Length: 381
Length: 95
Image 1: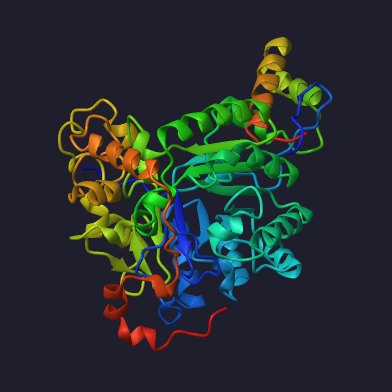
Image 2 (image 1 turned 30 degrees about the vertical axis):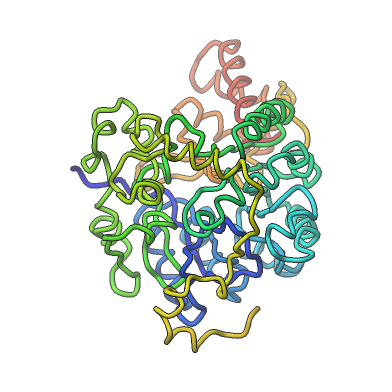
């Protein structure tokens, strides 16, 4: 295999601390503690190394990246390195002054998560008063002329509100809206029955979606992430494993995608021990599913193998127990029907309560696995 | 971008805030960077985008390109309008 192309973007997960408790959070169920987070100097080095490696964009994410008091410094370092800087935020902690300071530091774009089209989102995110704060923050961001994207994860409890989500995006003068179905691993996998829509609900929402896309043409950029469990072919997860993105966790572990730690048998490297270029080129976890050589049939001879790159490895593991199996989102997978049956069965029943994403709800095994770190947990933000 | 932009000869196009044209040393080409988007303009598109400085209007850009490339103005005008309208609809050009 020839040398891999450089990554396009780095996802900098600055922290796993977050005031929200969304039950579909993309963070691992074993959340990292504040005491293990990289310091400012190390993040600045990682950002420079990413730019030198060829990354063009940095996404500051979390957890909630604005709990980091050094966010302005990191944005400044990224801008100085020539990177396009994007902040992915829950937008409930920002003040008007801080929005201005971030814009001043060279921030290019802000993505604000919304849990629903209205205050009903507060129950989903487990944060009272959150929706109102997000709306206020969106206005502050637009007031300094930064473009915003609204990120909205959709599921059975808000999928009937798509038209209102578009109304909200227009009203807030958003540039772009990203409507993404839940990706079922980690916290979302625990909460699948509470989130999975039925086929009928999904079909209705797609009709609404199509009408709305037509309605906002030229006024809003729309990204729609399809629901895997009802798909016929998998999506190109991360644009292909270790092909476009690298993800750095709060403590400095470098991952090919944010859920990669759910897959057993992968060895991850840390920016504390190795340079980013070395990790990108040589890390075992990156090499494991890069390109097409790892693929089983029917993927290996599939004409779409360099379009979808085999779909999602984390999903393959979650459903089949084998991370190298064909993504069960693909109808050619022998496990595809298992996935469809799961979705149909779970969505037919009443939605159970959410298991909210927080430190207390971490699986016991995970909590006892890191006792030394528990002691150093700082007071809640 | 609350309203859809319609490109005309009088439009004064520019890259909106949050969209950047820069040279990518690693890959040896120009790129347009936008929120979770990356466009690699072809040589013709690049010549057009470079002229979208927020000062020249579309008519002046077309004149400039027709002179620089000694090409038929009507053909250039059609190409420039089509490209700028497409970019505006994708949110990476404003006027």
